Length: 248
Ligand SMILES: C[S@@+](CC[C@H](N)C(=O)[O-])C[C@H]1O[C@@H](n2cnc3c(N)ncnc32)[C@H](O)[C@@H]1O
Image (cartoon, rainbow, N blue to C red; front, side, top):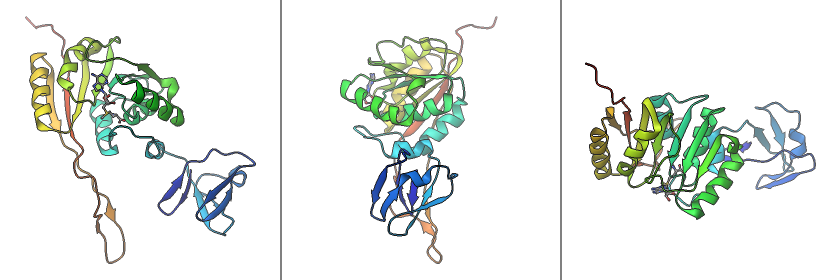
């Protein structure tokens, strides 16, 4: 990734390639052999920095036919579910594939089984995820997840769609005992329906969290919160699947 101030470009390194920017032309071959954190010069004598991209840098450049999940919410999901290398996670709807690709990055060499019912979004998500290099860790289901989840014994089911309460029964079938259910919803009425259904299906440790994050402008004499931030994204409801066994 090339960076200059707030501008960032994801560029594939090829010997003969020339990359045009408002700062002049960058001869990409000049980056070969340079360590991350070093700089190359443009034709207008400006310095561009070379950094290893993080998943967020790819998602930033995605085609977005849908709202995508924000880093603050994805970070909380990772923390609260403990999913990591080797985990198997079911996720829906795929949407633009932002959450899918980040989950895939963290569960490698595990798997994300993603469900999307709309053909057009499904194709765009696949293209977006391909750009992140995570396709080998994603299995796509072009299906309505409320009808059935074909996987079983999974570590987590993570839902970002408008009717999460309809996914709780299939999620219970797919989860291993003790597994995590997570639902992201923008409104309170969705949370109430979801929590009601989680209780009906005997899920445990149900809690809903709203996560705030605010970037700070760091400028001498003017350090303060940035003026334009995303105020409301949604609420995350977490729950654990219990076994149906009762202790005598
Ligand atoms: C807000 S978007 C998901 C965005 C995604 N989490 C991301 O970060 O890019 C919601 C998606 O859920 C899909 N969807 C809604 N209901 C569904 C269902 N029952 N089964 C599968 N996909 C569904 C919609 O078509 C839409 O693409």
